[in-house]
Image 1 (spheres, rainbow, N blue to C red):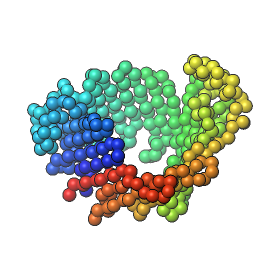
Image 2 (spheres, helix red, strand yellow):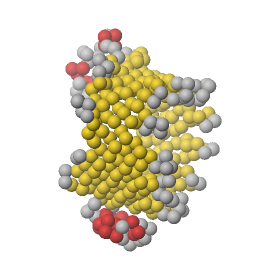
Image 3 (cartoon, rainbow, N blue to C red):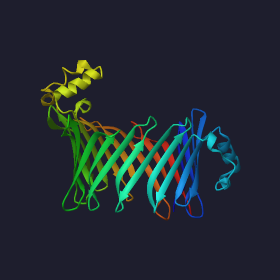
Image 4 (cartoon, rainbow, N blue to C red):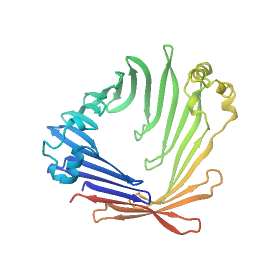
Length: 351
């Protein structure tokens, strides 16, 4: 049952999205409307299909196409003559070959253009090329072992930018490590690293972030989710202010960049001893409780240092006979323990 309409409302704003389909269950139109501060903003999306390719044309409220659609209704979709490319806010073309996307082209209302193209071998994407509005060409090359991605290398205007290597657990083939390499002169060096840890159910539990500082990798951030029954505890640890100076080949190159960015005052702070004087701090602690559909029914925002509850939000989730989410009512809990409705979100589905 595809989604046909979504409505959101709180005390300050209102938003709705409608999705329209043809007999082939293809999306032929969308209508997004938001209202806030007494103002209304809308966007109409019109889809044109040619075989397996399609074009998405978007119009803002205030255009003739938008006015015609809102006055005549969705029955005009699939017909011609009531909208024009000239007043479109954007036009996107998607080209497929045997069901695989091979090209995207985008043009906005200022006639600025962007393009993306993709090449494949044995059903796997081996390259991706993007051309930005200023003519910058970015190309990404992918390498695989069987159907598992091992690396991707990015080149900007034919100049090497970075290379990322992927490692996997031998037992379950889940991603275990992601390493980013940059170049210093003509030599590759390890700039950063991410490590991924899973529980027995193969759910991601922890991500560790390492960055190069003074020619060595240092752990500077941890994101962790602890699952216990229907409770999810999310913790975020961070070494403050250090992420912006991570990844450089050595201190000298990092200091040179700070000077180029007019941040000379920071050179004396980020010295050889800096990483020995700082430590990870817990900066965020949130506890969620979920229902049997894994949707949140309660969120507690905790003080990251004192483990004290700072705020609590409750959610009422209702489902239809197909077990699809029908509406969500959000309640904030006041300091005296009372609940106040904060927002409501409702969903409609195609029969």
